[in-house]
Image (tube, rainbow, N blue to C red; front, side, top):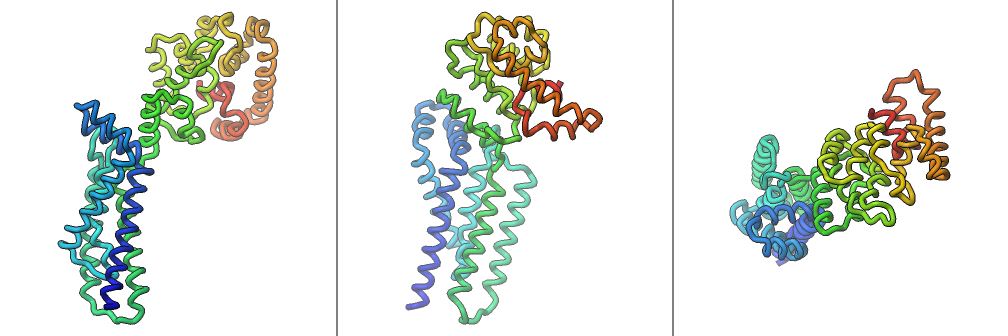
Length: 347
């Protein structure tokens, strides 16, 4: 009777652990990726896409239940008990990882290396557990050994899920941004990865498009990009500049000039009379150019940015003979969110 009770506790323990992990995996860690997969699966039906996209909790619960149901054939086929019972969730763990392998283009985006490593790991885990199961065991400390064995197996399976599934930060960041852009939540989009140094060309463009859509009255529409663009890490300035140039948007063109460090074209294209307050990075570019008109029209703002530019030059001056990377690192903390820093080291 005690032995049956212990076996039942093991089944409940493994079931609860795996359920909690599977739900968190789908609902929290892979939220945007699962939504992207749903859009891919139901690409021909906008109504189904909308229904499932708005019901992420329900979708996560359904996928969690499916993964748990796969433990039934796992238990029938693998037939592990007691301290090795957790290995019966091998098929369930493979489902979690394989289902979340989307790479932005392909549903099963895992590389050949990942597939091979997965097969080898799964087979090795099965064989090792079978060998352990065939070895006679003492009843001494049976419960602690059973608990420890299952916790170890669950940890291995969860690690396997993380390896097989797509955990690329930039992909998840981009998918989250795309969702918020479609919902017109531009300010929230710009908070994603705000302090991260990693980016890619797609993320750069999504941020720029969000900035162009921010409300900035009474200034011209879209000039929020001139206030925020260089607060973020930019992976490919030239590619972003080309994308902005292709838009029929004055603010996008002005920002493209700044990204290309083409201050002369910027000065020729900006109309200062349209602005009540000049966006920070526009003013910093005009300070670099020592633009006399900007000094007259926006005297106070020009003076403040000129003082910041002088401070940057003073900090940079003693480092003149040092390697470029050393100068970049030395001025990064205080000035990396200024156009002065970008213009100096990216041109």
